[in-house]
Amino acid sequence: MRVSRLSLGAINQSVKLVDIQWLKGGRNSHDGLYEKWNAFSRIHVRELGSQPFGWGLSSRYRAKREIGQLYLDIDSGAATVITKFDGNLNAVEHLKYDVTALAHYLRNPTSVLVIGIGGGRDILTSLAFGQRHVTGVEINPDILRLLTRRFGQYSGSLQNNPDVTLVHDEARSYVARSLESYGIIQASLIDTWAATSAGAYVLTENGLYTKEAWLTFLTHLTPDGILTMSRWYYEAQPAEILRLAALATASLMDIGVADPRQHVIIVRNQDVATIMVAKRPFSAADIDAVTKISKAMEFQPVLTPRFAERPEFEAISTPGQYEHLIRTYPLNIEAPTDDSPFFFHMLRAGDLLKRSTFQGMNQLNLRAVNVLGRSLVIVSGLSVIAIIAPLVFRRKVGEARSIRLMIYFAAIGLAFMMVEIGQLERLIVFLGHPIYGLTVVLFVLLLASSCGSFYSSRMRPWMWLLPVALAAFIFASPSVTYQLTAASTPVRIAVSALLLFPSGFFMGMAFPLGISKAVSVNEGAPTAWYWGVNGAFSVISSVLAVAVAVFWGVTVTLLVGLGAYILALIALGDLKWEIT
Image 1 (cartoon, rainbow, N blue to C red):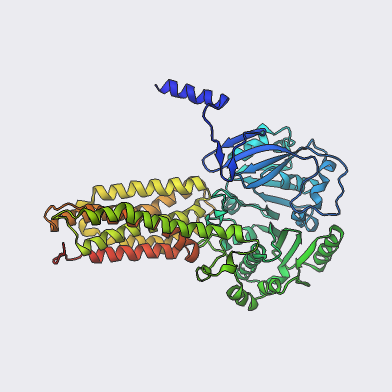
Image 2 (cartoon, rainbow, N blue to C red):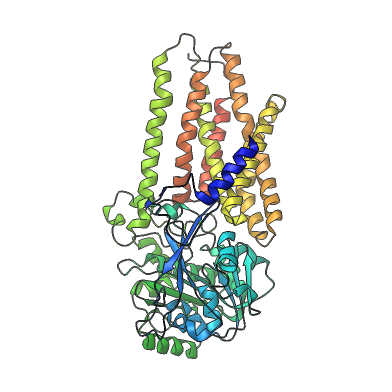
């Protein structure tokens, strides 16, 4: 039987007897040159036109030759381009005309670190500028294999270039471990739309766009180094770029910079803007060079130490004005932290009922919050219909319905999912990989809680340690994870397991102890109500926890779970009076 299944699987890989027909946003056309799925992404390669591609290509550029290009689609929403390269750098000169390449005009020659290799465009850009050495870090192994193997010859076998080092790793932890300093650290339009076709990637964590990450990047720059990132610029409401500027200001102030504006330059071309953050103030020569290049390329300076295109960009880079703008801007542009690593989520809870919040170019991103709200309403309704209503109507004589026990089971149902999702949100940034974040947290919690359940009858007097263990995780884990960001992946996994196990063990004791108490105080009466209430609140909490995390942060999510466990222990106290 196993042999036949393996044979069918092998046959299906070649002839596609069974295949995915629908992707988010439309039907899978099965065209293109290559398609690959892994545990956290789908990549698809197809031909692209021969006109040189650029995210923010200057209108002054005139193509001198056609060029081979492949379109690399990631998760049916994000994309990059693989450029055909035969070693002739003159053939890729168009890369110098992209606004994403601006930092290379200011620091040259130097060492470069590229975050997110993708199709290799930023690697080729560094080579085109004659940079001394370029290191590319890519988290997705299939993208790296695609570039170096499947289309390796097409893309110029970059892995064989002595001036290039390609690494499969999570960029933030790689930089933290690195002993090298870089003249340029570059990340161009790094994101994913993997969550939903409605743009729910705003609800996903991104450890590259937090203050702690930027502090790591800044400390690994040479004294005159530049951190440069590119994002979309929406004319009506340039919230993404303002939030990058807020990140720059907050990070610079944290390392003791008194006037962050002297360290920040932002330039845009149409819908793409590039921010450059220097470790030391930009010199007059730097500013003159940016002004000259922008004029020649028809780029638009947004913010320099001498100029601000809009008053909010001047404010966001000026201490004193910075705090006021963050409080009064229509969207949340405060610098994200590891406690709230949702860079693309910019909606405040207080603005949920404002129609204007969902208008403009940010509508696609913010629509995800609407999806989350509807999900909460749906799961709440289904929980009432499928779990609570049948219990109400069955009216079985003698069934236990202790109010305090129902509070207990509701509280532990709410608490478990709040804590689980809060721990997942906290550690996924530390572990640096979506697969590690999900599998490590879930595996350790399931293992720990099953052990707690097994030993619950013998450990009953120690149940009071549950809030203690959980509080220890809440308040100790941020410092521990930040200090160990540079550790290797196995060490980070082990540390995560050690952080999770104590609280997970006592969380596993809660349900069996509750059932034991219910059976004893109700003299063996059926306990379906308690199971139902616990299940209903667990389902509701699975969505509610995400909402709490994105609006108020991971710590608040965990504190809600802690509070629910404390309420449960109070409810489980001396059960001398019963209402059945």
